[in-house]
Length: 632
Ligand code: AMP
Ligand code: MG
Image (cartoon, rainbow, N blue to C red):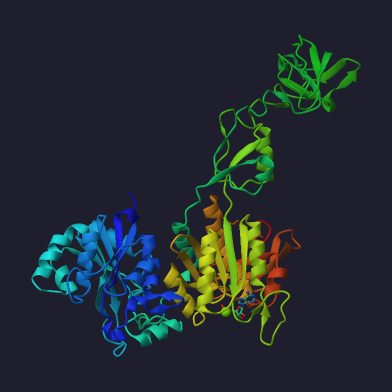
């Protein structure tokens, strides 16, 4: 049974909203909806069913979540979150209850999962989120533990203990939790648990400024940038192949991923046949010395076997591909005959050995053997091989649908006037090309303005239509602030700083709406960075989703000139491979390597991969290159 089916979600919206001037907090407008609606959207994917604890404006809450019960406190007088918990536990139809406050719309998408894991591990009655915080006034002081009791997963069976606790007149959440066995789960992202307490804070978030800053970075500098391989591993770890398959006629299966092994129903070739035009005979009749003359008794053509067995001193004229006549085991190629005179063929000793020039039945493929294993991306040779088995239809993985859009107020689409300070959007065109080459169905969603509402709307639409979403722009530090907010709101997306060049920032994670989800790759904006990060991160992930392997083959070439490189990051430089004077491959760079210089990519025929630990390269040294052939 899935965790989700065991959990009921409870939105705590029964407070007085004292610090907001007694407004009903959950119903405050926020980014095109209400605060509670945002919490609902975040909670729904994690639970089987949701209830809302509210003490005012019940019809509005009812409207918010059609079908979900709205539960007022059983206790009188706005008794606080424990009263909400009490009524929630009374209602709870599942074995577990997950609470979330109505004013905290940024909590993690894996909240239930992580709380549950800790609860199981520690045999606890409940699990609660905890973060480490720093006092902004005293940045040098040690961080302190901040519990978040309103983000709790509880066994529904603790209700009698809660009733007893409330009967004593006590109302404090943590006081009650002290009566239980509690597992604490430390979350890194304290901003995810920040709540909106005042109208100022609400406006502050509405204007899409960042959620309260996470604890200050450690004093000894920024966290180290993530190495490329590590990011690739983290991405691939999370992504699973799609299950759905379809059966296609062979001619439609090019570039698709085979979903089931192709088992050969026959031997290929089906029977022993000749590899040459010549004469079929019995190897035992070949002369040990001198010559021997054979009489031709018939002709075997491909498709027209000769079925009579030759006797001693006889042979059969045979064409390439013709079935070997009975009794024969050797073919003399016609050009190796010592003499041919009418039906008389003379063969010298040692012209051939017995058994030569035969293609044996099953030497290509044996009946019952695996001809091609599932997971293979079908190339022209594979289509031919499958056809050689007489198989006309194959089961392949379904195609992926990938939605993509560019972000940036400065971007203009083709056909638009190029205003002062604007650029034409090129990323959508490179992305279109790269995705199409991968065999994905694409949805081009155009340019999205640097506006949180527009971004959220675009992500929602994309998640409803696609398996994966690829965006460009808006993920670099500074640019990313509102992107981060939105992605925290409707997804579980990590923002990475990578040890690579070009393409330092990358966002990766899942966008999750009430009904749908899609993987998100937030690529940087610079055109070369987009391509490089697509190839290094999106490509392997998409191929994995498609159900196939993605290893890229590098080859080595001699650097025609020195290349500067700083250890501690992977660099991808654009190069041109050619054949050097000595016949070995050599590579030179394509001039300026700025991450915005797309012409360097267009001119190049390879990427020079300078690995994480590698330092500058001297002229003449070997470097790894990734040829565009096979990639693009
Ligand atoms: P950003 O990551 O959004 O700060 O963008 C970084 C740089 O890439 C800026 O110079 C943008 O103008 C440029 N850029 C972003 N998106 C595109 C695009 N779709 N086409 C061309 N240039 C872009
Ligand atoms: Mg931008």
